[in-house]
Image: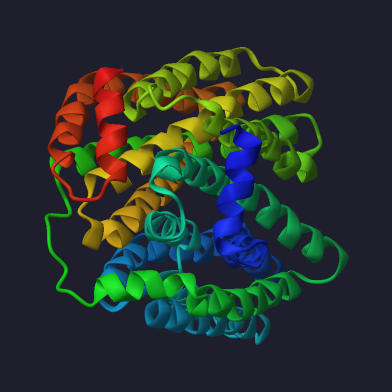
Length: 422
């Protein structure tokens, strides 16, 4: 089956409406952090206050998402995501009310924490749905290819949302008011978060969630994958900071977000193309290759001295970002008991957010001291760590895959065998 046919078949299992709904439902998460920063900074005149509020939203989401992801395993996505969507939408509205009412910005920080804690991680939760969708609605012979295609699409969709979300909220802030951008995110969350929650695909998980949640969640293998996602978060945070430093030095601070979006352009293209890889190239092999690529392709950042040289470097670097994340999430889904996949996927997403916060903070400090090149050393160091982790953790993940072949589900064993052979 060709990649085009695989995508056509995959989207036919759910209908294109679901694909659109699941994509739009993840935009508020991508919009909210930058939107909060812009809004609070605009209202108070302090980027420090805006940064604290945006950080409160991000850290609260990193804590709340895995807990609520575990709740979705136990009670089903429908009721949990529905409550999350409305609670977070109200939290976003509260941020606007607090920021524009003239009260202390600390109230905006509290509202940001509430909105972030409740914000659904739609991308990881959508990944959880694909296995039951594919197993119940497709032929057994196509299940392996379709699961690969589904995770390739989800990785590309996540990257696209984190390119489009900040650009959308920034554009709204430029032509109207930052508060309008946050309110737009709240509306998207209330409408499409609700739609995602009540979509018929959620019923496939609800039936499985009725049984008691069983199986160990935090295994050594998953811990290694959490470190892997923390590392890619370091890449995101340090690239954003370094890019801003380069753009500011060139006198074009306003286009820093657009330049950073080039990382997502290469990443989306590479993510979609992952569906072309044959099944014999297993997940651990893919992960190791993409980790090596991260290290090799981050090193040119140390030679960047202008926006003109930075742009092509970011596009090429992006070609390893989505493959790395796609294989990490694929391994996490495969090596986690089926009843705990919601918690596992949201834990991986939370690790990415924590890495982003640390990467941005460390790179920001280095940029203040020595400029953009110093900030990019964090990116290169993250690439080196990714390479080292892939070497050290590879054998452990292969053994974990061998253990996973005892599952009764027919999809995972097929891929596990293929990866062991690879």
